[in-house]
Length: 280
Ligand SMILES: [Zn+2]
Image (cartoon, rainbow, N blue to C red; front, top):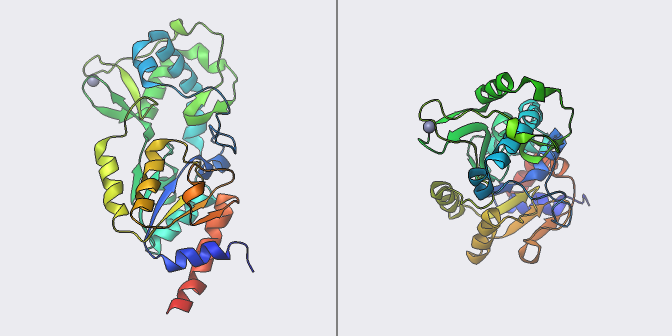
């Protein structure tokens, strides 16, 4: 029997899915993951909201690293996992896709019903007036103000970060909002920040309508994503996870598939035809 048959059967039995995705869907696109297979931090923790807004040098350091790390994000292309989920949506099987990623690659692959739970790195928001603007425009501005910084040759880190250390970050020049002079921030949910209520409400509304939850490429270590698994289980809905390594939801999963997520999801699409044929 195909090792993925239980997963194919599960999806065949549950026609309407809520999908929750994480970093595992994007690592094949060259976007690094924060956590190892045990769900522990590989490096230092990501930026916290209080530090970003309260410490000028920390904020400059964030944007200096982001200036270099953005190149990886901007050039990333959807992976097999993104394409497979877009295809599954076109087949009418996905009610809503909730992603914890901030790279926009699900939309790039063609998925339409997507909630970006933690926001999008390709957008910048002003903490003063709330206006949103495209990140590529800010990138141009950062490059113009800090041309010497582009020469640093560094490797990329998660969420558009880069391994830049030991420099005089106070000298990095970050623009303020052109409309109000307020502080600019990437339009992502930092640690220490809450997910906007309308996003949570949209997920809950979809959760009430689906037959099951499919977790793809996430350890679910962050509560903002994990809580939807908790709520699904409380509502008696089965949860399946495709993920290499431990997930926080392991004790409550109906089915766990430990394999490369893109490969498994692609099989799901090719398996759908036969699965549905049996039902009909
Ligand atoms: Zn503003």
